[in-house]
Amino acid sequence: MAYYLAFDAGTGSGRAVLFDESGAEISASSQEWWHATDARYPGSMDFDTAGNWAALARCCREVIATSGVDPKDIKAVSATAMREAFVLHDQTGTEIWACANVDARASDEVRALKTSHPDLERDIYNRSGQTYALGALPRLIWLRKHMPDVLERAQSLTMLSDWVLYRLSGALSSEPSNAGTTGLIGLADRAPLRDVLNLMDLPESLFPRAASTGEVIGEVHAAAAKDTGLAPGTLVVAGGGDCQTGALGLGVVNEGDCAVMGGTFWQQVVNVPLSLTDPTMNLRINPHVVPDLNQAEAISFFTGAVMRWFRDAFGQGKSYSELEAASKSVPPGAFGIIPVFSDVMRYGEWFHAAPSLLNLSIDPERSGPDAIFRALQENAAIVAHRNLEAVFDLTGRRPDRIIFAGGASKSAHWAQILADVTGLTVATPRVKEATAQGCAAAAATGAGLFASLREAGNAWSQIEAEFTPNSDLNALYADASIRWAKAYVAQRDLVTANVTTSMWQAPGT
Image (tube, rainbow, N blue to C red):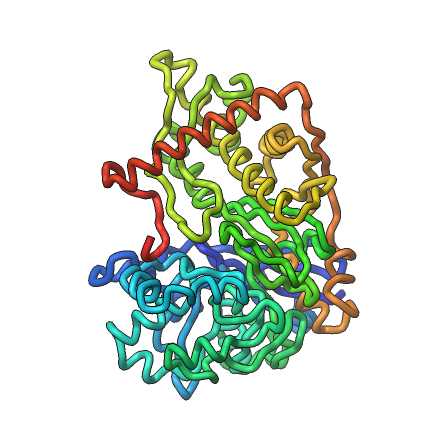
C-alpha cells in the first residue's frame, strides 16, 4: 500500500495527516499554536518559523508512530497552509522574517498608498483579485520603514505552504493558489505583477520559481528526514492555499461548484472562470489549484473562534456536543437573539463590528446558554448565505447544492441549519478535513497516482450525508437575515463613531 502525507500550517494549529491510496485518512496529529504580537507594533502577528517547524515535525513523527506505516511506503508529501502569511528568506535561504495571515501592522502604509497612488489598489484588484486588506505589499513597505535591514537582505518570499516544502527539500518555490493572496500575482497568467514590484522598488525576483500544485519540486533531505521521521528521498510536491486544497479534496473542481469550509474562519467559495472580476470589490478572487479556474471567495471571520469563546466563557465546562444537544430544544430563530460578530464580505472596506449579542431577554430560558448557542450556529449560516448570494448574483449561476466541510461539518445539526437558511441541499463529505485530503491528493498526483488534479479530486471525494432544506423555515430565516443585516449596519456605525471597538479591521480601514 502506498501512502501520502499532508502538512497543514493552519491559523490555530499545525497538523500532519496521512492518507492511503484510496483517500482514506489513516492517522493525524495536530498541535495548537498561537502567533505572538510584537509589543512594539500594534496589529502585528509574527509567525515563529523555528518553533512552528518543530511542531509540524513532531506531528509528522507522531503520525508515523501511531499509524505503524513504514516511512518508505510514504511515496510523497505536500503542504497546505493559511493564506496571506509569508516568510522572507536571505540569499542562503535562511528565514529572516515571517508573519501570520491577519497581521495588520501596516495601517499607516495602506493609508499612505491610497493617498500617493489612489488608483493602484483598484488596478491590483482587477488583475490579482486582492486588495490591500491582507496583501503583502503594505507589509513589505512597512518593513522598508521599520526594519530596512530585513528588506535589504530579503531575496525570496515564500507562502507558508511553500515554506514547509522548503524545510523538507531545500527548494524554494512559489505556488500560485497561495502566492496569489499576496496581491502581487496575476489571475490570468499567475505570474508576478512586475510593474507593481518595479513601481514600489521591490525586486522582480522576489518570488521564487513557480511550481503548480501537484508538481514535484524536490525530495526530503537528510536533515528534514531526521526532524520528521520521513524517509530521505521521499517526493516533495507543491501544495496550495488551504481553501483551494480544501476545494480539491471536496471534488469542487468544475466551474460553478460551491463549498463552505467551516473552521476558525468560514470560507464560502464558488469556482468561476478566469475572466470574472467583481466591480464592487466586495469579493476576493483567488487562483484555484485547478489551473483553468479561479475562485470567488467570501470569508466569515472568527466563526470557529467565537464558538470556542462561548464554550470557554459560558459553557460551564460542557463540550461542544453537549452544548449543541441542549440547544436542539430551542426553536428555530433562537427567540430573536441577534449575534454580531463577523460581517459579510466587504473586501474593499473591510472591518467588523464589536462582538455583541443583541435582543436578549431577561428570561433565562430565552437567552441562556442553550438559546445563545443555537443563535450563534444560525448566525454563522446566515452570514454564509448572504455571502454566497453575492457570489451567485455576480456569476449569474446558482448551484444545486453546497458542499459543507471542515470541523463544523461534523455537526449534522449545523449542516441542517445551513440547508434551512440557504434553501439549498447541503452535502457533507466522508472525510471532513478536506484541506488535508486535497493536499494529499496533490502529493498523490505528483507521485503519479493520478493524471490530473481534477481526476484526483473526483476520485477521492465521497459524500457521506445530504441535508434537504425545510421550506417551512424559509420565511423565518429570511426575516432573521434581514433583521441581522439592519442591526449590523448600526453596529458598524458605532465602530466608525469610535463608540465601540472593531472585532477586526483591515490595515488602513
